[in-house]
Length: 193
Image (tube, rainbow, N blue to C red; front, side, top):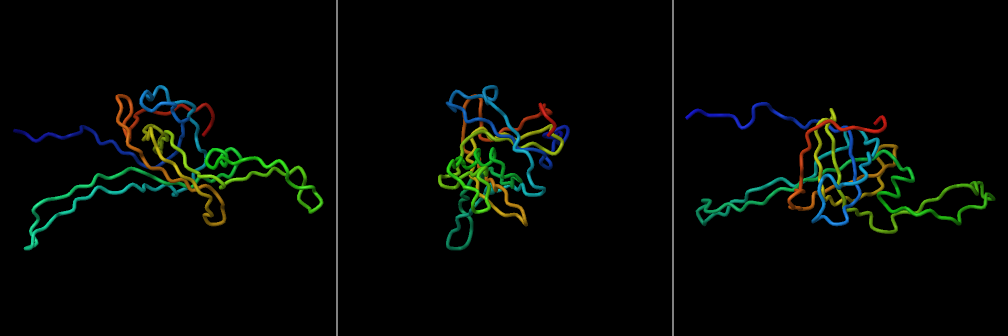
């Protein structure tokens, strides 16, 4: 019997060119890729800030008194990543933190203009559950997490304040959605990204 290859041509997922979030489905049991709504790019993600944070799969041997392995316990890994969104726009602060506009602000008498816009945030949990997609450097392959737990925090990276976002794949196994899904195909943007 001849030895074959699993794949005819290697496929690589290298780099990251964009991160896209969707609205949370009303019912995950009925959701499918075609019903994921309102995909929106998160814009500028700081160079080299994206890293994978999932836990590695592991095997832990159980040993007898002589040190010989008699059984191996296995633990499945998880999939997750984090990134630094280089924006503190009102839209991004509202999206990740539920920022609220403060209407009673300044009088102008103390040097701060009365026309200043003030947003209040971090007074409630910054945790989201929704689909998120990370796009490779050539925008022709993507990884989508249909049911992602997303948590954000303000962070200072060098001299820049931005939003540190941590993403973890939540288990889902329906006919149409799986915990992590690879997408082959170039994305079509309505604006220059």
